[in-house]
Length: 223
Image (cartoon, rainbow, N blue to C red; front, side, top):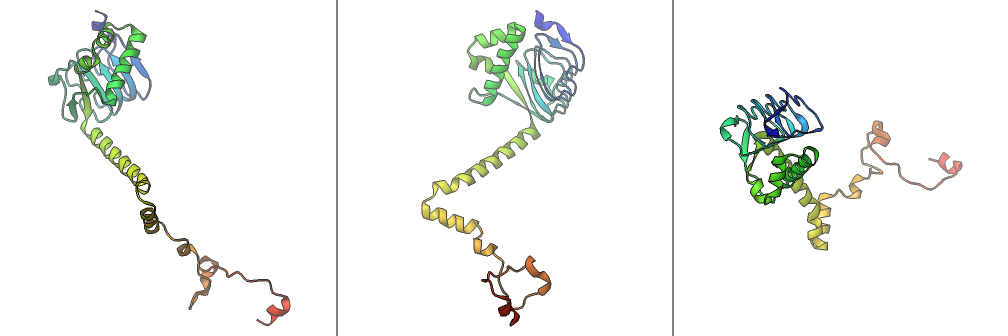
């Protein structure tokens, strides 16, 4: 089968920072090592695939070699019919994908693109079946630290969103109360016109000038 043919040599996509690659065949060793932004669909990889990967996305529709995902700290990989013993699980999690997750749509769309560009039989067969059944054959490779960082970011964004929506859910009186407690009164922002013991050297940096009506030179001479 075409998918069993090696069509990319060692270290393909090494250190890739962007772009996409769709390969209806197998890549040799060290595929996508240090990938930091590229998206790839391939139908098999040799040893050390996705090693030290920091970002990007890789879908493997076939076998993988030994030490897959060693030192992987970012990005995601999805492997069809994974043999977990071939993965280096020190820094990664092996997860199933639920149909309701956004990752399900991502994988589906990339398979469609892979089929369109390469005519892949594997992609065609996966898309022809019930998608929930095909999706269950994939394992998501998710770096532990990356997952923690994403969770922390999402929690922070959720808290910020809820904070913005809070006044809208309150009554008008409660909203005014929150605004008074969280917003500085304009009076607090004004500089004083006079103080009991002014420090002269501070001048206009510290004290505001008092507004006065115009006086003639004769009146001012009496000051």
